[in-house]
Image (tube, rainbow, N blue to C red; front, side):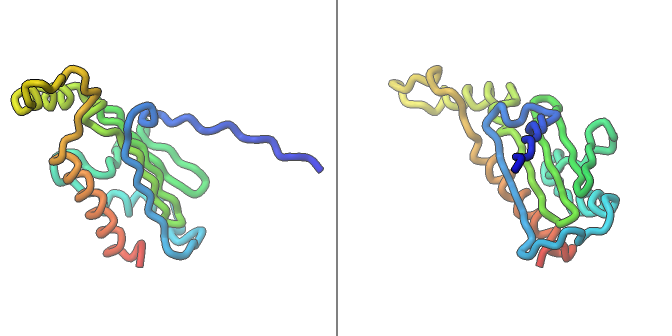
Amino acid sequence: MSVPALTPVQKLPVPVLDHPHWRVNYRPSAYVAGKLPTLAECWEVMQKASVSLRGWPFPYVPAHETERDYGETWVAAWSNFMGHLEYWRFYQSTQFLYLGSVREVTEPEWTAKLRRTMYSHAHANTDIDSVPGFLSLTNSIYNITEIFEFATRLAQAQIYR
């Protein structure tokens, strides 16, 4: 009996996995391979359900083909803009996978702003320079809100029941 050859792991077009990141995965309660019959319908669903609460959509659905990919049963998109790293896939089965960088780490402006804020709030004996990074509570609340709003829009579109 022969063992099938392993296929190499696909490298993502953006280095989102090289940094702390958010991973979001939605799965339908029952798997139906072609619930969305075409890849064009997958794009349409993503465009209609995308959320924009603060100027950057979740998920980012690019207009340019250079930031898109297609598989046999999925569509994908990514972004690498000013430290914002993002990659997602949406399958005809309606499974959705999102990977997005923690922006406080990959966007230098965030890091500098949070570090300055900590200098003004820290106790005298706190060594702020030794702290490897910071997480913005406000930004995290926005991220979580966008994640849930996007899921809600998919459910309202009857993608999930």
